[in-house]
Length: 278
View 1 (cartoon, one colour):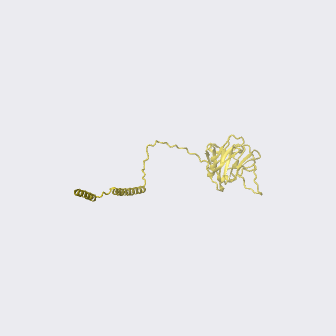
View 2: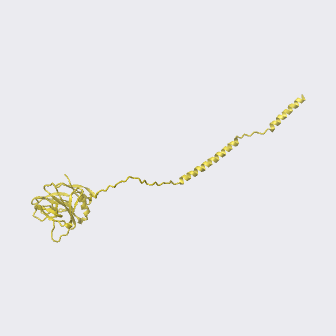
View 3: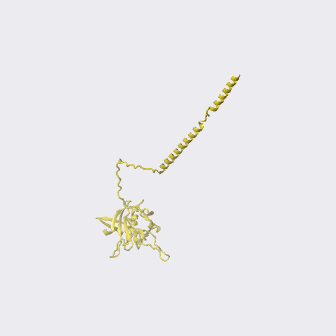
């Protein structure tokens, strides 16, 4: 019995010694978590710095453009050459007007159209009549405008005038009595009453054709010391054109007064607009 008790005590003591002498097992999980956390933090910081650096560099880099050379294999193109055309109506013209007696259409520059409407009048003479198209004269209650066959058409700034084939008035003629022009042997002649003509000095005339195919004889004003002349005087410019297919009028004279600041350029604009209509 005593031996048995001793044995049990020894076992008990040995068991207790074994329990005390065994090393304590510490879990490895906390160490692994700290390591993962540290590595993750380093990676996140690295990614953040790398992204910021790349973003900054991308913002600072300016786009570069590569100049491409132009191809040289274009097909050969032959340029179209337009013929030179005579001067046409200025864009500043304000509309077209019509002389009913001769079916002649024309346009006025704005500098003239602002003067108002032009009057078309047929004025009887002793025989036949004269056609007068011009701006109205300024009148008052003391002075009235009187048109009569005893005087040629009084041009106010600008106008047209002519006489009928059978016109008679018992007076000397003026420029606005003329009935067009003709050309013979290289010389120009003005047509007048009684189916007569007289030569126009070559140094004051120029024949042109406007865009509508109308032949126009421009007549420059001149100072005449030898006496009255049926042509335009210095300070004015005129033109003659022929009227076809009209039993009353065979031509018309056109005149612009340059003394009020109007120019020959404006006169050419009007001549370019002339057109016969049906």
